[in-house]
Length: 301
Image (cartoon, rainbow, N blue to C red; front, top):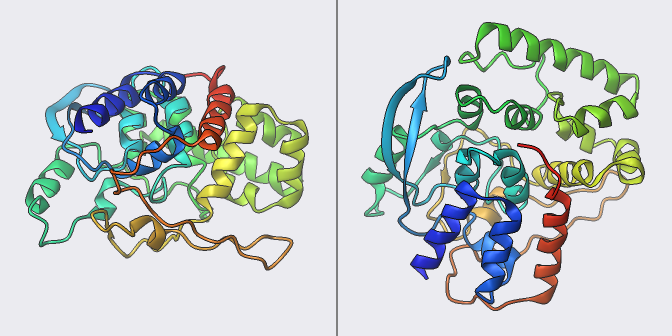
């Protein structure tokens, strides 16, 4: 199966969601189950990574083994279709999209421990920094919108180019005012145009806004909001390292989601991302993946 997974990861890094879905189905596998199984990359997969300065100049070029990296990292590296691939994979992540590679570790007893630490050093450890240095403005806005609301917006991101930081903070404050005044149409427009930097997590907690998007939004908007609701299920315990070689990592990182209109909790599914043996095709999963591909068919870079 290692050859299959390497081809799959290569497609995530270079192609579009529809191509990935087609490749999985052509191997008689279920799309959703397969993506969940590689939420944390379970095999040795080496790729070339360019580390860049803020001005876009190449600082360092490294061959990095992405074993135990989140598979969404390969989507971030996608040059032509990074936003749509990141959005497509978002619901299959094992941890919060806001966690950088620096938040991950493997157990010290793991024979790959030292190599994993070295791989972290040679990679773009923060998705936002990668989006900035590689000139991916739409991906950058998407990532910024999943940051929890802070008093001074993006004060923690010292790596921002000054002018860019000023602009993003201005956009954040303007969109916050839109939310406070319940100007849902303008906010939905910001999502549609990939200019939202205000916290979509806050928007997803507003039942009225969610219903507005469901009734009036495009497929792109609906997928964006679905991902926000999914993201709310992750623990935001930033002090604790995530041991990505733990088979129960997804179960440990996610928490039951409490509805804003009821106290009923959504049960957690058993994690199977490290189980590479059972790969049976399930028609329902294929249908979900097909729907996701439809959502993303007209998305931008």
